[in-house]
Amino acid sequence: MAQEYVNVINPEMRQQFLEKGWVKIENAVPLENIKKFSEDIWIRLGFDPNDKSTWTKEKIHTPRHREMVTKEFAPKGWQAICELVGGADRIDPTLFQSCGDSLIVNLGTDELERKNEDVPPRLLGNWHIDGDWFRHFLDSGEQALTVIVLFNDIKPRCGGTYIAPDGIKNVVKWLYDHPEGSDGWDVDETGSRSVCNISQCNDFVELTGNAGDMILFHPFMPHSASKNYNRVPRFITNPPVTLKQPFNLNRADPAEYSLVEQVILRALKESGIDSAAGWKPSTPRRRFTPRTRAGKDVLINEEVARMKAYSLKTGGAYQVESIHINGPIPYQTVIPLEGY
Image (cartoon, rainbow, N blue to C red; front, side, top):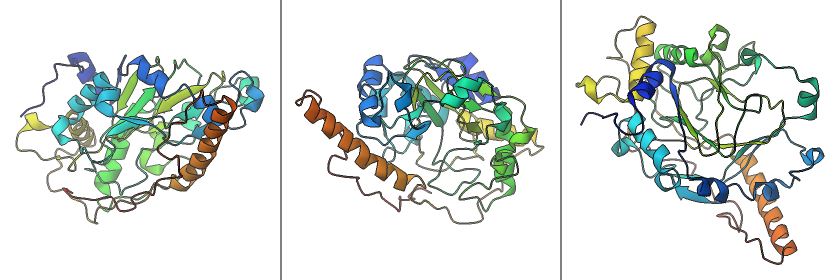
């Protein structure tokens, strides 16, 4: 059945996604869910929200302690996700089906605030596409969308993610030319991943918005963490969306192409390639333990200890809620590739 764009993704948003590779869904997450998953973040961090001298780290990728099925956590956001990838029936319900409180924190630094000098986006040095747990191919559906959930209002110069919409074509062309895929991106002389070819990009967008907004962008969108010059704490999450099968870039019925697939085909045409017919991976698909797993396990133990200590301090008024209450849950190293 052809995908209809009549719900959250209106015609203007559809066109923006096709041309620029991203859309913002306002009020995608009910504020009660935002509050529930962020109200104890300072306890978990061990920092005083009113004393910047205690903010000893600039960026922290916190582990998940609580979670909720995505379509319940973000009903409007979930609908938008389904519309972009071609329907809920294409999404794998056994992988990453929930959102949680694994907040990505950007607190800035004293030096950034003191100097107050903006780093040009091209020189941020952290340009990449997501997916540190699988081999990337042109049709990889493991990271079908990049999702950013805003847990607080994010203003300009406050650590919002930067994207480079004109870099999508660079990633698409690189993956088309390298059917062997890649398990990780080499870094070029600018400090950016060469697959993104960020030195050739000129369109840079700083993503801002309000608590509860969700920003959805193409999995081949180059993006980078930015600098929090104003030191207004920034809290986001970045849950993946995985498909049951790889993208189909050679469908018999053109109406069946998802918007995500259409962006890939559009980028190929911009590179002078009329079709993806005949393209296929030349090496086996592969999934593996995320490179960030070890660091997350350390943070799990630290955060659970802080929560337990705070609970004792408050006489139990603060209740510890964590799926890791007895320690980190073992990671499933080999994630099934059924359907792939």
